[in-house]
Image 1 (cartoon, rainbow, N blue to C red):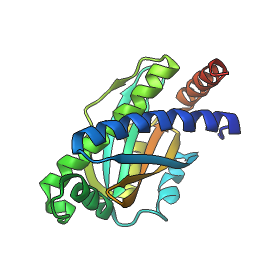
Image 2 (cartoon, one colour):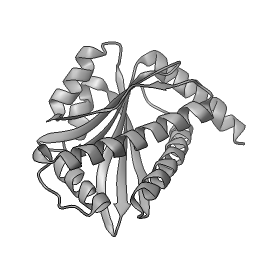
Image 3 (cartoon, rainbow, N blue to C red):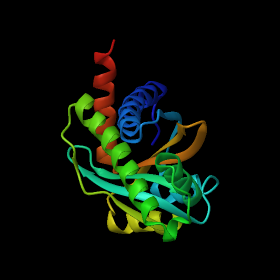
Length: 204
């Protein structure tokens, strides 16, 4: 399943709106200007997700995972390699970037960042596409990429495709890369595309 160029452009515009809101919230929280940029969006079957992300992510990853439900439902994840997660914590708190697995502060900061980014994006989708979206409490996991993808595939068997947003965080003269992943079933993708097309027509 692939998006047309118009559908992809509309989706990028929506995600940029969500990222703009997330960046404003992060800037207010930290006192520093934060930019979130969306250079690339791809869609792949869930069983190809690990292969899609593996060239950019190695070893264990820090994943903030949130389930959302409504007319469009699925799993939303913010995925960072552990080095980026630790550096992001240092940039946002001015505390040393200790190894993430022994650093409670880094876990709390990354979970809060994930919560802000995921809620801003999913909330923007819900508001602009006029669909009601409910969220679960986000949780942070430190696992291999294969374990993260495997747990989603097993626990949410109706999900079939992953929408991958390659994004970068820019703050205090530094740039780090992360990935926003939305895992959706075929029916939810079709409803999302229909809502995107209606929204895109309304913008003309």
